[in-house]
Length: 111
Image (tube, rainbow, N blue to C red; front, side, top):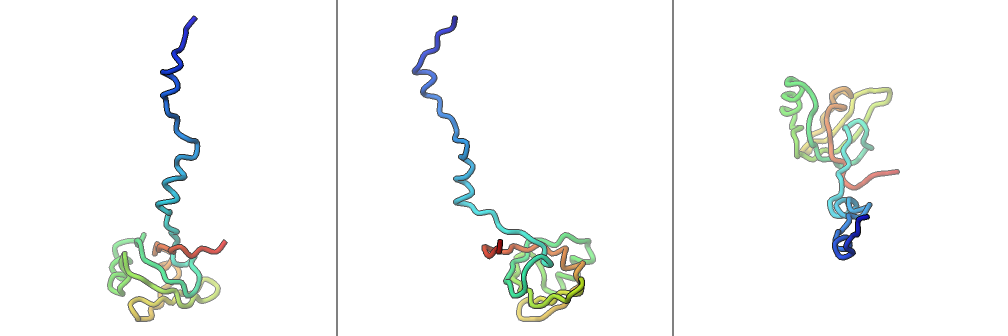
């Protein structure tokens, strides 16, 4: 029969079941969406472009690079093109290309 020392077992610190919650409160997870999922008039920050070399080059020539702020101005109905404002310039790009632009939506989220 084994006898356990109470002092030895009381000094063990167990992690709380919700210890992961401390990190989330202090380091909020950014809201990441593609450009087509965002509402009109929202100011967004470009995080990345998930496209091929040609599409990335075209978007870089238009000024859409990671870190730049863009505003979604209009979206045509029935899967049409999307109009955005980049550095004061209005640009219209196709919905397929807009869906490959990953943006940080900030803290404004509607449930």
